Image 1 (tube, rainbow, N blue to C red):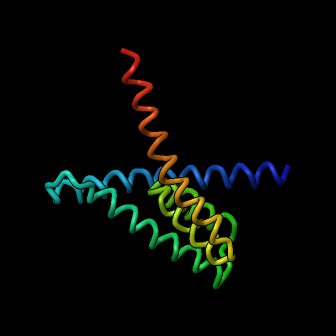
Image 2 (cartoon, helix red, strand yellow; image 1 turned 30 degrees about the vertical axis):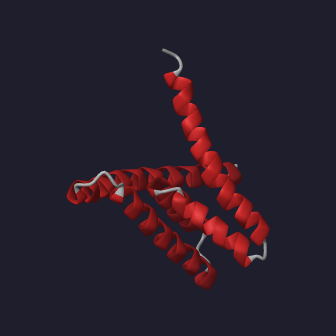
Length: 131
């Protein structure tokens, strides 16, 4: 029963972090984009870069002082995962390189970008062809 209680606590912490991160992403992205007055997605770019910087801080703190599972999952998976998944992509890519798996890193980076773009385009085509 103790395991189930801890698991539920972690799920709730991740959910709370995701809520805060998602709302923060929307508000900050809109604020920046509205000030930019441009078609270029400055808001999203800014959120992605901030998210990458913050996940670096979270995992740097974790390596230095060992954050508890609850704090790490709340901050990295919840808050920053809700803020931007690009930060997780960036951290995982750096981790692969640091761990000596450069080939896997290149496959992951290239595959994520190319397959992500193709999947987005495929989803758009699937919907647009249903008229």
